[in-house]
Image: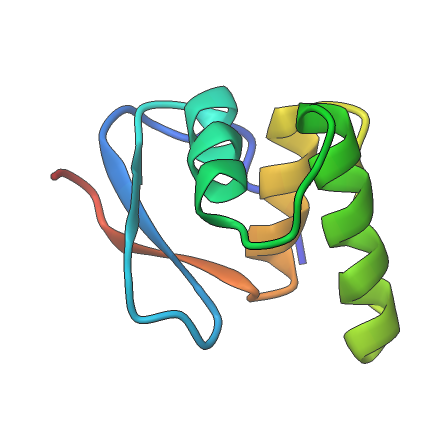
Length: 89
């Protein structure tokens, strides 16, 4: 399965098991929104992505890269944990 190379402008996303959508124009904005809605505190964006990736691995052994927001989101889409639900909001 290949990576989605670019998140296009104005997409809506939904995490597996979450009914509320995330609206974002790019990966940086999406990770910031995910972090803002997370109940688990994090020191910064990198800490949030690292902890989220650890939880994904614990849940089902999924590997999620945290080298950048774009790689992080690409991997969440690839493992079907994050889905695009609308192309525009």
